[in-house]
Figure 1: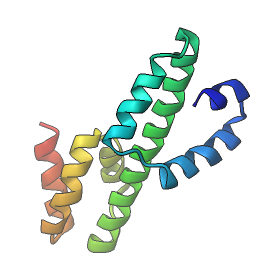
Figure 2: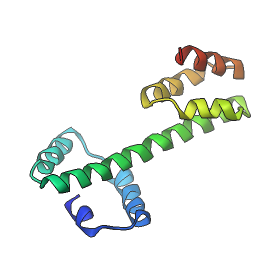
Figure 3: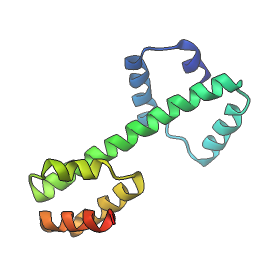
Figure 4: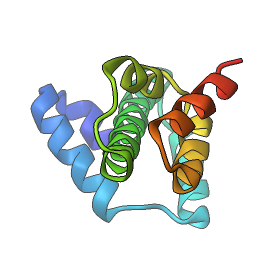
Length: 121
């Protein structure tokens, strides 16, 4: 991470590296703890830049998860209206995960709409 911060890469290269990290360098609990410990040794400015990178990776992962859920819904229910897709993209990560499980119970688009209306109350 320190190397990534000091390289000051352009966004395209950073995205390429983040894709690699997401795919091949998943941390287990011990590695995550070691990462957090090492991060505390960074200077404040480096810590902030690393957290920006990590936050960017997390945001990309959440957006990918939302896109996957939308594809699964379309595969199960067929076409969905744009306003429904917008509502899904506005859900937080916890609700997206709940929707991912709930979609197995949906038979119709109305089931999805009912779930979204219940969730947004």
